[in-house]
Amino acid sequence: MTILASHTRTVPVPADALFARWADVDTHPEWSKGLDWTRLDGPVELGARGRLKPAGGPSWRFEVTELVADRVFADTTYLPGARLTFRHAAEPVEGGTEVQVSVDLSGRMSWLWTRVLGGPTALQADIEKDLRALVALLQPTS
Image (cartoon, rainbow, N blue to C red; front, side, top):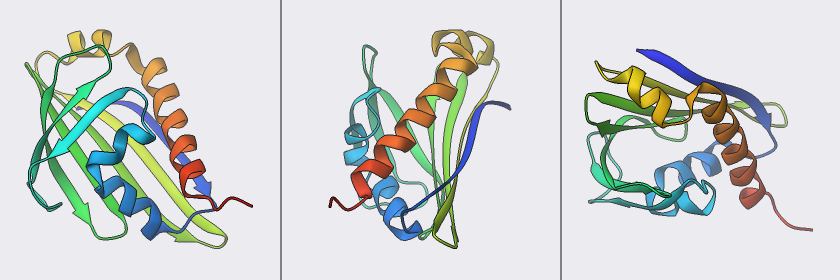
């Protein structure tokens, strides 16, 4: 397994609110602009499966691979010869939530998918941008 990107930041949003949006897979394109659409086939639970379509790419099958209520949501996308996992974790802290987002890739074709996905620098920028967009959606407007 290769960790391609990781980002930790404290945000002024409750952990349960973040988790609710991570677990609401069908709304991911509202804050992750790299996705055209996402669909989960059934309720959010460990092992649930669905499909997602990245902007400009084909659709792929994914699975919920880690789930801890109000704390952790991870999904793994199955690419030819590789598995791409996005993991989101939320830990309540004074004044908000410490969020950790990571992207890892495993499998014999990881080297190719690293290039196709734009490499670690692009993925790092994407997860930071996505977290900013999600926090902006969840913060109350004045």
